[in-house]
Image: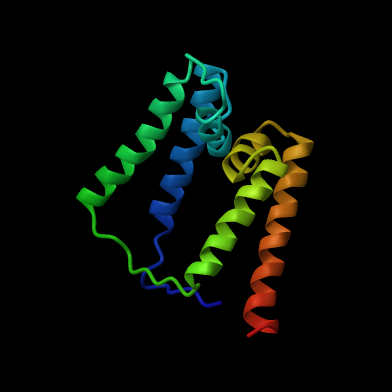
Length: 144
């Protein structure tokens, strides 16, 4: 791996990390809830639907609106997907399956759980990071 130093943006990355941490912390303090996306979205599709799902819809709506505002105010980065459609579908299904088995996703465990010194979140983060490293190594260096 090589870093493209001319296009490396540490300040915007730092600002984004601070905003994510601040918003997750405020959400926990003010709403008493964890800002884990899989749990928030998963709660929208539970049967029977809870009448208290308004905050979930507002949270997801805020994510969509923020992305639209970003798209209208800046140019998108160069993007190239090197995986095929079946590989992308399989990857998405595996991530979803892993998220359900781990009882949370990277935002729930990695941002919120680690900040609360959760041992379960530490185990989940170590597991999904190791799985990611191993998968990339196998696909790029062994199977290539």
